[in-house]
Amino acid sequence: MPAGSPPRRWPRVLVAAVVAVAAVCATTSSAAAVTLPGSFRWNSGGVVISPRSDSSHSLVSIKDPSVVRYNNRWYVYASTVNSAGKYSMATVNFTDWSQAASAPTYHLDTNPNIGSRYAAAPQLFYFAPQHKWYLVYQTGPPSFSTASDPGRPDTWSAPQHFFAAEPPIVTQNKGSHGWIDFWVICDSANCYLFFSDDNGHLYRSRTSVANFPDGFTDTTIVLQDSNKFHLFEASNVYKLKGQNGYLLLVEAIGSDGRRYFRSWTAGRLDGAWTPLADTESNPFARADNVTFTGPAWTKDFSHGEMIRDGYDQTLTIDPCHLQYLYQGKDPSASGPYTYLPWRLGLLTQTGSSC
Image 1 (spheres, rainbow, N blue to C red):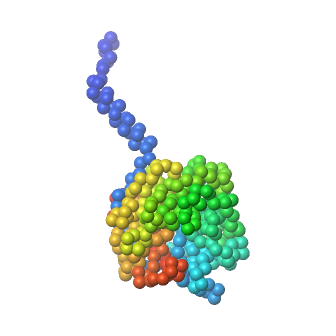
Image 2: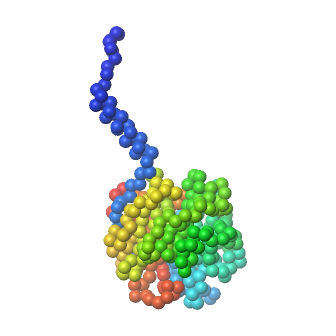
Image 3: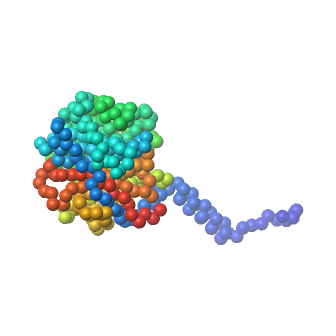
């Protein structure tokens, strides 16, 4: 600019446009942006893990799996049910899914710290602040054990309870049912415990990362439905890798009596949940959006776990590579729920937009 020339003035329209673009960019970078498709398609192979009986365990099902990849091995913990209808837990580990069916089974009732008590619906994760592995499960109330290595199931500690007593809000709303399917996830400041009651309510409790596993309080109802089958059980919550958002899954029972998953997203673990794929006609995972490589061995897609991108307490998943380890059963099987022949299968998302 020549000396003595007056400063140039930008047209007001251009200034306004620049400000508007800057505002949009700032909002985009700070908002809880979740970029997941509004509908999903999946492929499943055959059964990957079946119940394996031995001289002390006559099993009818394996179900409720939790899975992590750690030190180049897959670790699966799950519930088992024997021919007398008794629940316990078991674990297998392997390097490749092709080995899952033949991997040796360790029954956790042989760990004297856990023993023959009722124990079911495990969740496995590494709690990095304490350099310790946690196994969260139900013994009636929500319980946990700890160990230094998920590959040493004989070393899990005796169960401890998260709560001294059932929160009043649960007692007031659970009806004739109980609190079940406990799920821990943490952000940088707090840890949250999600759970269901088979009566149309999803609950959430909170403690600080510093106090975990103690101090859970502020139990509240996060979601509810007057039709309990629309919001039944088996909730999972995950952090979306590379995004400021979370994915919630809850198992429902459809109008055809088959089990399927609904989904929601949120920007915060203590925030409001926005429906994603949450109906029978547009589910997260249901018989009509799953194709099979081989025979369709199940029409139920029930209690399971996403394949995570890591193994720590943040429960991070890669939204571009979604897989889900689920429980399914022979479509012709009938009878009391406890005795249904659940097996484990693996869903892989098809047609990802990433």
